[in-house]
Length: 159
Image (cartoon, rainbow, N blue to C red):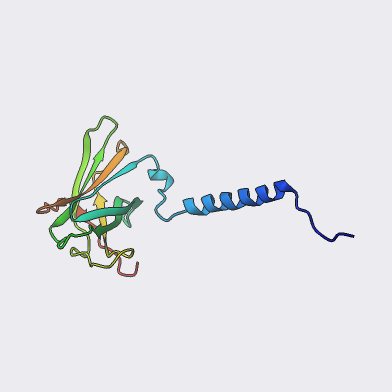
């Protein structure tokens, strides 16, 4: 009597499909996933020659105002990032500018680390004039003096 177990060919397909489904399910559940309130707003990230705008998200601040937050890293070869600031603009469906704010990231001089772990700085900029007509928010790293017309939200120390 033969004691070999035979597995139906479709059994391995079911296992593979389950593994792929689990991979995509867990891969999509990230912390920067927009809340349903802001899911219709698209984000445009524009780098400068010294700073790369990385992960960015929209959230409600402690006072209920809309806040754009995220991380920036130093571009490879950049020596100084202290003269870079962020311009945040909100556009409506016709491309008209509805919001224009400016802010800085902390620390202003991004620490240098060897890849793949690059040094990063955080930013949180409160959008005081936010309206529901905004469909696109552009975050642009920009060299030069910062007008600081935006209200900067303090970054919590424990996060």
